[in-house]
Length: 182
Image (cartoon, rainbow, N blue to C red):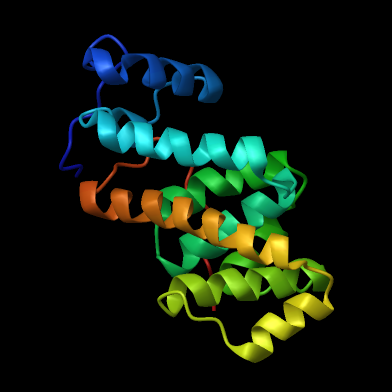
């Protein structure tokens, strides 16, 4: 059960109301995570600003962004983000089986994407550390220094939401991601 009640656009305080309204329009409703974040305008605005910077300056296509989000969400064991990004990843062209493969730790259907997924999983799981072998593999797969640097921002915004969901115990208000079977 969630620790933080979910604000509606109407119940949110004035500083966060406009951002919450924009997010509701983008997603078709106020998602629980956003309604909870609206209790603190600094949390909601930080989330929105991180996403705005990625949108404005990022180089990854939607498919790659969603693969990163799925990988980080799996490392962080965030059921909410895995569910949300499974939906977004399917809209970006990944199949459900591919989303499951990424969450398990490998994009074995795409060698280039797999190299990047391994980088972001290490960033998330190893407190920012990435082995030289993983880094070199990503470079050999064609990821530039610019892209490998940018990947860090994607990991950071996803860790922000993953950790917030754990902290708030956000209730799932979207379809759950497929269960990972051994």
